[in-house]
Length: 156
Image (tube, rainbow, N blue to C red; front, top):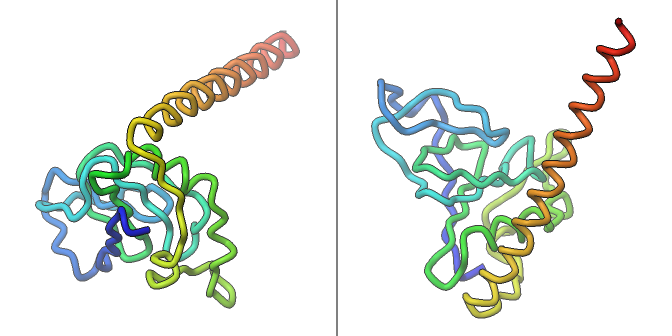
């Protein structure tokens, strides 16, 4: 993955958590506090280093990630959403080095081979995937609303 850079944050204990504006985010996407500085740019995909290794998340703001997560940031030749969709489709559990708790190491991440089409083609693919995932989200929301309506009807 030569088109990206990877950062693993530091532990929350080592980070001076002052009243900053940049969220400190862990591998599960939970905000653990706010820092005065950031190490990850907008559009960085978080991949869990410990625990949640197969649930990549795209973060659309500058942030600090703790040491249980890798921040993967696309360089100029790679669309940030294309990288995110790639990570969603990649099975990181195949690289699991944990004995009990899932675990990834940076050297394994850097060995991943990724076909990278020209930027306009990446953007075309991302546009299609955005539409598909938007339709999936609408379907989930509709199903949840139908479930709530059914519960309300049953209770009445």
